[in-house]
Amino acid sequence: MNNNQPQLERQEGCVLLAGPTASGKSALAMAIAEEFDGVIINADSMQVYQGLRVLTARPSVEDEEKLPHRLYGFLKPTELCTAASWRDAALREIEAARAEGKLPIVAGGTGLYFDILTKGIAEIPPISSDVRDRLRGLQRDEGTAIIFEQLKQKDPAMAARLKEGDTQRLLRALEVIEETGTSLLDWQAKAPTGPILDGERLWLALSPEREWVYERCNQRLDWMLEEGGALQEVTALKELSLDPSLPIMKALGVPELMSVLDGDMDLEEAKDRIKMLTRRYAKRQMTWIRNKMCEANCHFTQDLESLKRYFFPIIRRFLLTQGK
Image 1: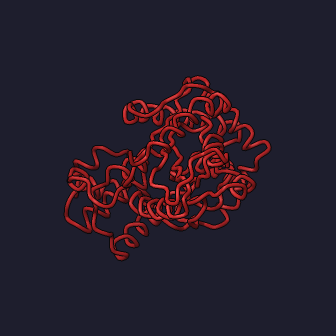
Image 2 (image 1 turned 90 degrees about the vertical axis):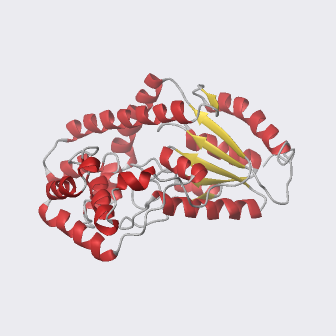
Image 3 (image 1 turned 180 degrees about the horizontal axis):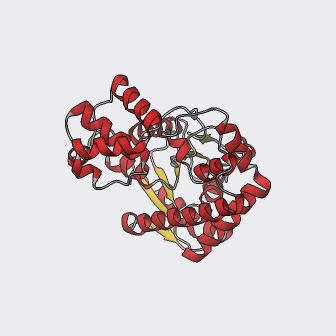
């Protein structure tokens, strides 16, 4: 930590750092945490799970040991992380960091997480284990097509918004209509409720050129497969024989590498498809940042030192003016 930084007995502010995949968020978050005595709190929906450190680009063991990291790999692959449950966990970690006088730094690329953390979400009643187990068993035994057909019968408006292959969202929509008798669309239209982040917020966003991000995504996947051990991670995941509807089974690259292991796709074909899907994902993230973070302190620089020179003075001013 820089000893010239303002010292607070209790930290009340929070830094929110968003950016597309492969844009350098993790490196910048670590630089901010080191400079301003911070705690990095994960806002990536796949990095919450154990088992796919490489394929989800989760910080390394060394990085997680060097500086405080929270909500990384804290769930088993068999667990389900909803946006609301992540929000609740993030609020606890933010409060814990503040109580220690440390700066909470919420960093990630899942736009929904930032939305629910700062704006709330329509609270849907919990789904009973009877309904959830029955529908997931049906999907496992007879396939996603039957889930899609049942949703079209019971909630055609919601079904029209989803694709037949989108297993997780189809199951969620069918669970909600069966449990509550009300469409997920109607629940989502309700005014946001639930706890949200209090105190002062500093929004930071990375928005480098699209082609640069695409090339970084391609290079990173090559490293993951050639040196990082991504295929070995998926092999270990496959050996768990998990329910294919679980979120971790839908992580970028998992379905394609599962197909490689099953002999249904060769590695080069899988690699090309993963790169294409990752570019699409990065594009959606950049669109979200452009539409939802228009008031953020946004920078287009691609190297860490330039990002530090740009963002550090903004953070210093933020810390010095809190509560004024």
